[in-house]
Image (cartoon, rainbow, N blue to C red; front, side, top):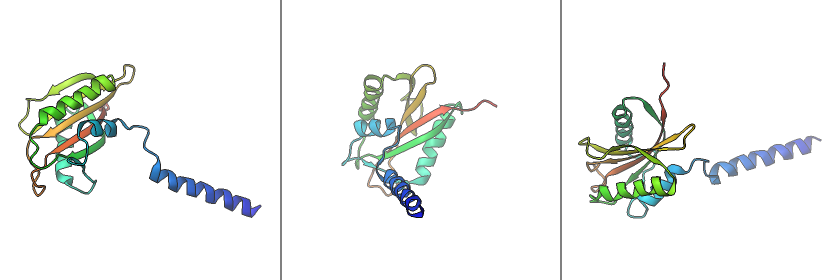
Length: 161
């Protein structure tokens, strides 16, 4: 009897460990959009520990730009290839993916509104919509061989107090 309980526990632990490594999260929208818009190898996914100040600044700017009506709940960042300057082309790809592939509706096109960032925001669904933003930094990041940061952010409406 003790052996059975131990075996079941061992199987559950193994499944949990394997699941943590191999199962994609249910929400792969940010990953799918990023892979469509800024594919590797020239562009590369930015690990969590890389450029933390720049990432935090982008998230803060997005929430401030949207008048704190939304808050960021998911994020994925990419560094573009060195010297990349064609932000409009990746913005166009992001828009195409969001509208044609995912059925999103453009809510905000802040492509010319700010000197530091450009933003697109789409809504997906009707009854309880999901929101995804594509954000492109205009300036090159320091110590990156002239790479720019692109953010793929999932947002939700901020709770009203």
